[in-house]
Amino acid sequence: MNASKLDHIDKEILNLLQKQARMPLKEIAEKVFLSSPAVSARIDRLMKEGYIDSFQAHLNPIALGYHIKAFINLEVEPIQKKEFYPFIESIPNVIECNCVTGNYAMLISVLFKSTADLDIFINQLQRFGKTKTQIVFSTSVKHRGVVIDE
Image 1 (spheres, one colour):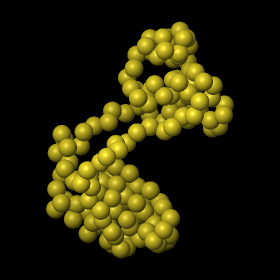
Image 2: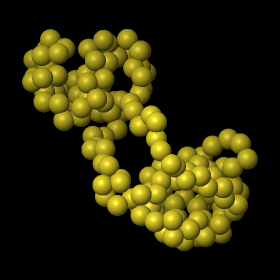
Image 3: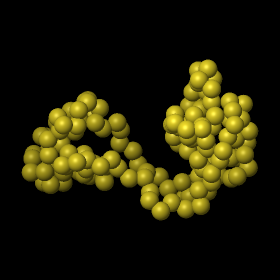
Image 4: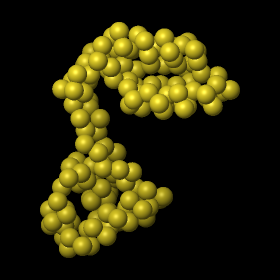
């Protein structure tokens, strides 16, 4: 994958899809001055080449009863990763897990319906190492797309 291989139309299609993944092909085609079949072919190519991972709906966790969002820092020794990765993959409340630099090896983003549920999960995590948890009070900048330079 090389972003410099993308022309201005590819970049505009990616920007449009990032803002509204369900935008009709016809509407995208009008905005980029191509036919719908040409846009469809470009989207298929962008997916095949790995520029588009997937199409997803962003759900409102609060509306679904998940009132607790937290970031958990976890110390994990490299030797534990073989056991840790399958464990963390199996937890549906984990919405993201990143291996990071610094004092903690992992940064885990989670959603839970209650602090009691979060506490149970943290106790399970502590078999891998020390944790540090931050509960989110509010979000001033919601998840947004990748900046695509023109």
